[in-house]
Image 1: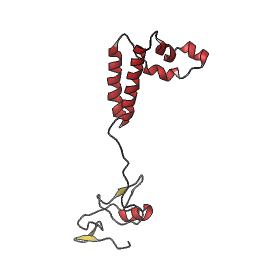
Image 2: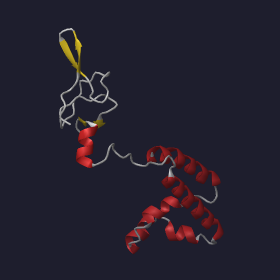
Image 3: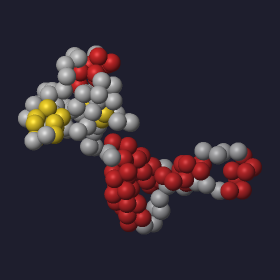
Image 4: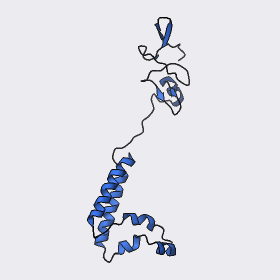
Length: 149
C-alpha cells in the first residue's frame, strides 16, 4: 500500500492519522514504510514498531502469534511432589538407606566422586520433624510459583 497518509486539518497544521482508523491521530510511524499507525494498529518490535501491512508483507501473518503460557506452576508442583515422595521413601525404607545414599557428605563425595549428592541432598528432609517438610514446601510453592510465572 503506497497511499499517502490521511491527515486532519487543525487550522494551518496537518495532523497525521492512522490509515485504518482515520478518526485517530497518530504521531508514531512504521519503521519500514513510514506511514502513521495508531496504538491499536502498532505491532511493537524489539526496536520501534511496524504497521500491520508491513508485518503481513514480512511474515505472512496478519498479527503476531502470542506464546502460550500456563498459569499453573507445573515445575513447582513437580518439585513438591518429588520432595514428598522422597520423604515418604525415607519413612518406608528402613535403616536410613535413602539418607545414606543421597545425603551430601563432603569427605565421601571427594573420595567417591558422587557429585549427584549435591543435588539429591536438597530433596531430603528431617524424619523427626514433619514441619520441616511442610514449611519448606510452603516456601517452595510461594517463591517457585512467583518465579515460574
